[in-house]
Image (cartoon, rainbow, N blue to C red):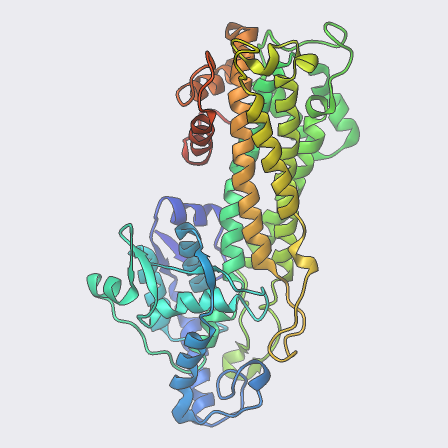
Length: 501
């Protein structure tokens, strides 16, 4: 059981909730803050004070005063009118993450919702009732309005949810779990949809996958290094300490550990003086990606514990301040950076694939074919990798440099952070398939060189791969191998195979 406070949630805890389905609860201290801020909202309504989003309309209509008899209608209409998401739904894991991040933000006690709203969000998490939320439609400022409105629809018993591996109406799932939808009261609709939880949830899921993939890329590249008889001198600690980037130093160290005991690696001058950059510069390139991942992690860890709605309630209602914490620019930048960092792992991987399949660069059989000429071997595997890498380059264009005004020009600068997070996730999926192709080729290359000469740790990576994809003894439909290897990279247990430090 993970206790939510609004301030202490970690990426590790999110992983347990998303993938291990660990349950959550709210701390007593956070619930006390929620009750205090709710009392302030009730007093504002009772005293007919003019406060944005509580007794006024929204956006450009913020100057329209709302009679207190219309408060509930205002919130309901807000959710229904803003549920304009389109396209395919977010992955169910992302939907679950949105629930978690939304409730954690509300528990900070700045939003003015009732405890009943908090409890229903927690019930949805603990009973795995996940809103169906379309991916497209958010500008990434004023909050992720469209996606979070679809989340809020669930709480009022409308819209669809994923429940027990089926897509059904939210009302049916609530009935099955003996839960009752809520009637939104003053400010609650706005508090639910004014936030960055769609882009952040997508970003967190993407980051957790990207981090695992980055470690896997090192294990796979180490085996490629053996298949190409790489020169280990380039990984000498002195070289990397001389430059000074800790992440570069760490990558080189992990490679030395993977390759320890290998009889396939070489020294300067034994086979050649220097390797190509895709081998020699692995610590520099992968290390730079790790620098970016560290930046992304830092921003996500702040955002998952941030108050991002508007207005915010301070000092037990003495101050209710309208601001712009819903603007997604910090996460938009982080997602754009993550796109580039992951795309580069694919870029350099594809170059290593080319070196393995090109006999002029590797001294291996053409395209790693068992019968060159009659059979094409891994020829088109490299084509597929090149196609995925090229697609990544298009997706890596920064979403954050774009902005389109909305709400009659009241909201005249937006982040497009949700687009950035979605594209980052697509790049991660593409990169995983590129690494699956490298894995398949690397296993074939080291077989040709002699698997008995592998290092102990790369031997284990080889054996793991061979449980999924057989040796290339004749041409076959390699698409199936790539997908199976990619699935193993995504869902398999790698705890025994990866070196982390």
